[in-house]
Image (cartoon, rainbow, N blue to C red; front, side, top):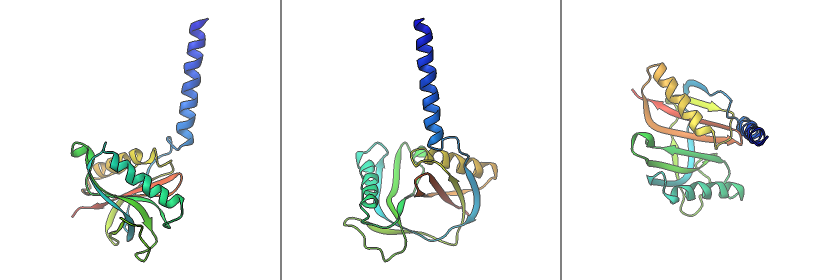
Length: 174
């Protein structure tokens, strides 16, 4: 009788876990296309260091708080200048908020950077919570590039314009 209760509890936990994963968009497919980039302005802070560094998490939290408090208009967005999986967890990133234009009043300690427009890019998008989206997006982007024999630059624009939607772009290399 004890084994049946244990198995039932495990089964219930699995159902709840899979249900939650599905609710967050974990089973949603990634859409990947070739397109032309649009100029995107990101207000944020530059980080260069280990992925486990607490400062990296602090930068993400600061950006989310600025949005929550409506101190900066926009949505979460980041520019990555390398692929940390290829560089022993060392990351070069600009963490912040995608803003409507270059005239936005920047918070103290923030600077403005621009993702260039009119460039050929590969773009992956998914309807999923931003906790799950990055892994799905990059896997989709890299798989698409590999299958289509595309060389992409190791610079990535991440955008999360809605709660359950994310996209990432990478410029095509010449």
